[in-house]
Image (cartoon, rainbow, N blue to C red; front, side, top):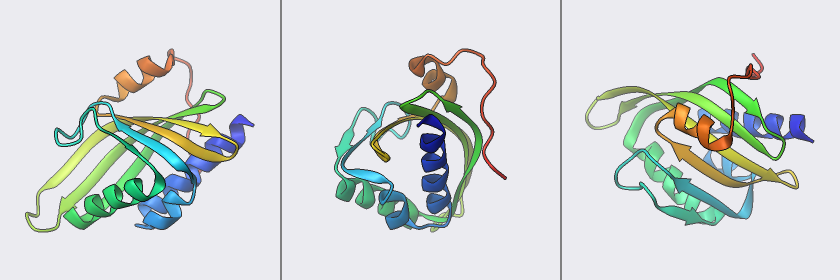
Length: 142
């Protein structure tokens, strides 16, 4: 089932990059939990539970940026979890500020749905927390 979980995460990230918030959320369980472990100070340590709250949070994020994209650098298949290391590239809508940084997401999948997302500003921390050793990652499909 783990290849299916990797495919699910790739499909969800594809929807994200098209700006399709509903499409991204459609890959998640109704009671999905999103935890900002480290990262944006306004959300750090805050857990959102439920697809609707995740949709609202992503809507606010997308409204703040003129362009917003996650380039998938690595996907690690851990069975019921997938660790995604991504490069976040965005331009502020009002400010024109450009950001270019990396994130790590530990994504738990059950019964073909994303049930938990843990966001880490430091991808190495996400990899450590998930127990990933220096094994070769599965690169995303082109």
